[in-house]
Image 1 (cartoon, helix red, strand yellow):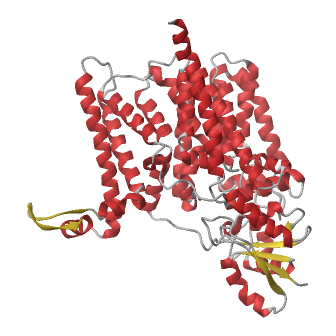
Image 2 (cartoon, rainbow, N blue to C red; image 1 turned 90 degrees about the vertical axis):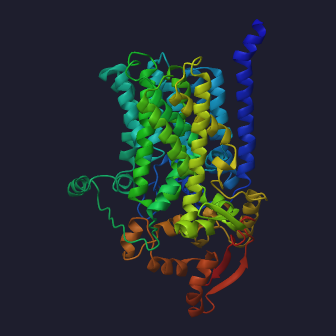
Image 3 (cartoon, rainbow, N blue to C red; image 1 turned 60 degrees about the horizontal axis):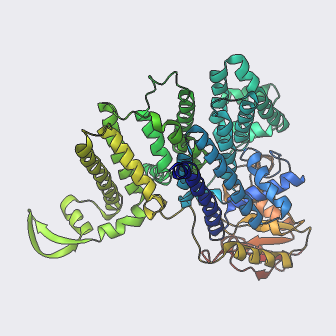
Length: 624
């Protein structure tokens, strides 16, 4: 009996966790060979490579756009020192993902036990959207990796000074990877002081503070102008400018002509999309917020850890929601932003599960029921592209004044006749009602369980509601209900192989040392330039139309890493080769016709992905 008990409590969860690690690598490899190469991947890898090899410097005027903190580029850039190309970049991201997953397991085990640690890693592995974000050279995986290991060292029961110092240093690396994680760094310093008092807390935090300060001094004033200026109060920039601390740095945002302006309904839908793809961590934070006995647990060793985790997750979530409303050009990035800090909420599960109140009060119970209905309705609304057509085209019996008539009709026609809702409105309303029906089903099941077991079980209705919704979220995570259409298109063919083949065509016709004009909308990715050793380019073009501006003079644009029509015309005249997609080739046709004989299309690459038939480049040789 002892052997079986020991196996069940120790070896079984270890085997389950080890299986999750292996499956993570296998699924990540499958994903990374099945999704097209994005513009962001090219941006991170190219800039990281340039910065590490000294071609450019982060936050350099007249250089690439350093729109993230330096480690966002330098860490993925390390892969390019081994072998330039998208394959090494993506494989390195999978390696980081595995390191992150091991850190998550170790932290969860430290907070509770091996079974909950195994549960957490499986929550990550079965979420394909997270794998898509973490298996590409984006800053999400680097941030999540540093964050998870920071938490491992910060949340130990008996923290040694070196552990706390290392945890704070890793929090500094989180900030130096992504500026949107600044509150995590601030709360970490406050947490150190809260745990240890002012003297010890600041002592343990000093190396991290020095590191962050040194990096800002190293890259000043560019790091302020490119990273912090937009968030800082205007008077701060004014004071810095008057005191000469910004040097001769010019700044003008100009006007982005294609800047989207989404309607409120689109914003709400995408916010619920973020909740859909990260439902388990979101519910974990909500459940702890409703059912953790904060007043009674003040003196418990876990109390400060739980407060640290939930405050961090709550503040980061709200700040990113507010950022969407302030600048909704980042709207469709919102689900991706949650993957930066989801480990905070996931770790609330092992940190608090044994302390959650089983008897929730009336207010908590009502809130739990409302949250279930709101989230399920909102997720249903987000699914409108997937389920609205099947719902609206359902054939139902015709009826008038509560009497059935002969024949049938599509549901949408009946709704138009009865309520006057047009088809466009029904596309949003009906999926939301379907989600509401699912939420009501959760409440019905919870009520049934409570009625059956209320005398023998200690749990209240509110606790059963949250437990039921959490269980449903976990079970549905691997399904299309939570996965949705996915964070990227999944292709049938090997996208890395296709990308490498198209890049080899470029390499065969463009000599080393050539000056290249890059002109694409979103595809193919500028990561193709990784396969052209020694080739020079106009670095601001790597961010494509996102840094294109109008009503800005050329000098100001160049200094601030933007580009304009005037600069584009100058650059294409200077280049030895122009690499253009169909849209840009059409745009430049009048210019090419005007300079007859100067531009010659010598070939066209194959598509970089079977999912994107037009993801090819037209290669033009430019005569001087």
